Image (tube, rainbow, N blue to C red; front, side):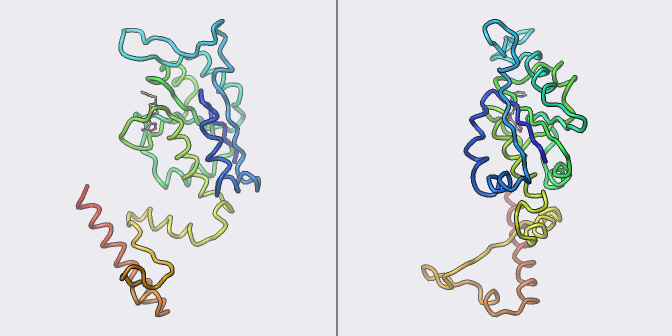
Length: 221
Ligand code: 4GX
């Protein structure tokens, strides 16, 4: 999958994209990410990409011209352009799984108070929100979307079991507790069923623990 991330701060992504699973996916050629600086596409003589909102109001908006020009410069035959915004449809594991099948994604990161609506109308296919809170820019949201989507590209996780626990998530059940060595830590023991080796009993215990965890969290919300 190819991904172009369009933002005013491409350096924001450099660290996370070279590390761990995403870094390995890029090295293995499973994920091809390009970082595009929207400022490169301004034609303003002072290099400006933002201006005051018509009708008044606090802060600045990104002007439509450099945003459209940046998207048009990277657009290909099969491109899906996503704008990260709190006004978008909530991101879900199901949507990530679908996006992982796309050939080319463009992730558009807004800065300041957002982007002139005409750029969104002309070039954006889909608006997505990662949650009901306001970030300082679309950059962290784009990183979350890319991270959660990359997990669904075959070969990225390197082990098949994780795909199964994703569908678990989609069934609306939260994962229960997990344990590793040592068997005893600060007076707390690993539940004996997990080291006794009865796989049917282990599956039963995990289902029960997941249901308990799900019920507990839903009571808090
Ligand atoms: N899930 N942000 C977009 C700019 C902005 C401001 C106002 C539209 C209106 C966010 C989120 C998010 C911060 C990205 C503000 N756009 N993105 N940015 N939550 O909070 O995706």
